Image 1: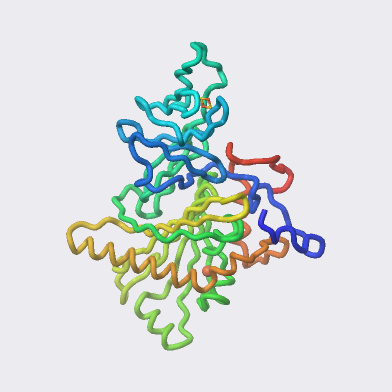
Image 2 (image 1 turned 45 degrees about the vertical axis):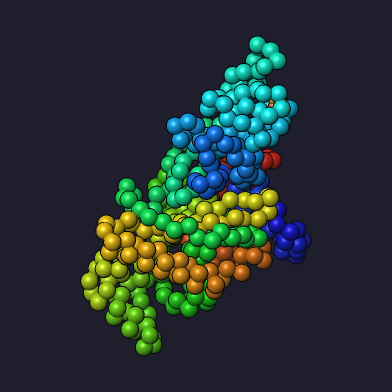
Length: 358
Ligand code: FES
Ligand SMILES: [Fe+2]
């Protein structure tokens, strides 16, 4: 729990939720475990994902595997062991585990106890990272960028950072309509559309008429058209894909300005901080000109993010988020919280999950 959750508890009681803003719950979903380049053949990487100790290694065919990081014999860190014939061998007493987490050899005896096995985790290589899912088989795929599904993409990995609040809270930044006006000076009345097709994702689109109160706004309206729209697609409560420049025209011509895409991957650190990894994504374009356009777009997307982050990033370092006084205009936030509270707690959750508060 963040320290400020202990403050003002009598005078400003915190509204508790089953999953939203609850540090004890880690929901099923895809989490970053390492950079692709950090996981090599014949070597074991021991790391922490969402507070859990796991090991990662590449087998002889190059496929990455992930499993619990403590040996089931006496709890030694398997990261100090070695890979022999695609099996992890513990450093201490040389128990060996295959890629399914089964113990297949104990030098001291022939019998292998039933409990001598490791929980394994599904893995995926994408966007320059190894992602893991807190189950042996993932029932859902890693989020694809909306409107780039199935297409070849190129990406740029942004500088990661930390926030001193729960990631469910910092993820709200993209869909809080009031602060667009008060912080980002975007004086647009936004219409809201929400698409909650399956339990693990929710897409929230905000669109409105471009304002024309001053010269700059009128020029902007001439350039990019009368409508402005952007969308956030959330997956598993730990990933957010932001799409900017949705459906804008350039001097009346549609599709000339490409959409800009940012993916944010979140996970809890030390049970009280949030790790945020931005990834900038665009379509892979052909030829040298295509390369230049894609590179420029990734650069512009990154600049756009730094600009937005500079205006309100600090809010999320001191916030003690409370949902007692949400207004009708906060409808996207309320819907998003409802979506989070319906997600599935994973094997990586701790403590009892209160089933009464939704
Ligand atoms: S602690 Fe791993 S084999 Fe004994
Ligand atoms: Fe913002």
